[in-house]
Every structure is written in structure tokens, then in C-alpha cells.
Image 1 (cartoon, rainbow, N blue to C red):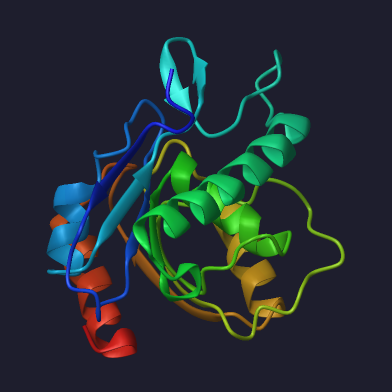
Image 2 (cartoon, helix red, strand yellow; image 1 turned 180 degrees about the vertical axis):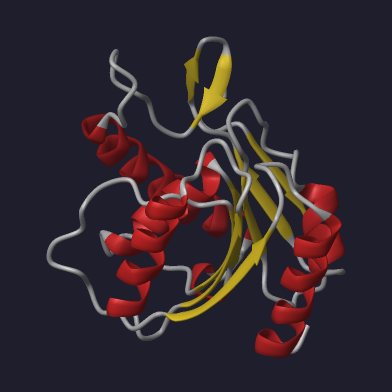
Amino acid sequence: MPKYYHYFRAGIATKPPILMFHGTGGYEDELAPLAQQLAPGSPLLGIRGRLTEQGRTRYFAHTPDGHFDLTSLANETTWLMTAIDELAAKYKLAVARMIVVGYSNGANIATHAWLTQQAKFKTGILFHPMQLTDYQPIPDLNEIKVWASYGSLDPIVTATNFAALTQTLTTAHADLTVFKAEQSHALSPQELAAAKNWLQASQGL
């Protein structure tokens, strides 16, 4: 078994690498077409979550009663940040220049890594993220730029939870842009276009 199930596609060295975190049941290359659409020519690195739950891949587990398993979350966040460092060294990528693109479960662990001050990446596009726990104390994320989307018909991410997350990120002084639309948990062409426009404006891509 490989140490990390991952996907790498070389790109233009001067462009920031895209770091891809899949949703529940996804794989390391699942977001590659989307990432290419958002940032044409950028190197791509995707890392598969190493857990499975009911046969579906995940970055961290639930408890038997359905809540987030915070011990699993802590362990898997540390594992994932180590994986990023090692793979970045292997492929000669600068972690601080990476732009994380995360969907659902992948967006959640990216946010958690920031709010626990473990992430070295500073820019992120988060599709349908959630707040996983109460973060105290809230760190200073004034160097972090985040674009986050929410669907008002989303059966997984509640309006209350998303509002708590955006408040936490705002209190942390992150540079936050929010996209809201009348949609479910699935990605829409409208949010992909909005994310690309934001990336072009904020990163010059």
C-alpha cells in the first residue's frame, strides 16, 4: 500500500499549485477537471483521505452517534499536513503558494487546518464547508484569503452552521468572500464561475 494515495500533474512552474481535497467518497484526482478550469496551467496535487466510512473515503471520521470525531479530526489533520509537506518536497512545490480547492469533507478539513494553525497554504476555495467545532481561542488569519460557497437548499450544511463558520473566519481576520445561491450540496456552474472570477481577481490567474 502506498504511503499516500495521491495525484500529481505538473504544470507551469511560475503558477501557484492547486491542492485538491475531495468530498466524501471521492478520490485524489476527482477535482482535477475542476481545478484545471479554475486555474489553467497550474500544477495539481490531490491527496486522498485515508479513512473509509460505510465504504466511502473521508478525511476524518464520525462518532457512532453521527457527530464529528474530534480525535480522528486531529489525527487526520496532522497526517494530511505531513503528507502535503512530503509530497511538496518530492515534486518541488512551494506549500505557502498553494491554493487549496476543497469540496465538502475536503473543505472542512482545510478550514480546520487553518483554524488550528496547522496549514501553511494561505489561499482557498471552499465549496460547501462546515464549522466542525468551537474554535477557542480564535487564531489570527490575517494572511489568509478564502472564498466559500453555500447553498440555501443544502441538506448537509445548515444556514446556522455556515453563519458560524463565516463569523469565525471574520473574527480571525481572514479575507473572506462568500457566495450564496439557491442550490443544494452539489456544485453549480454559477458557483464555479464565481470561484474562478474571484481567483483571477485575487491571484491574477
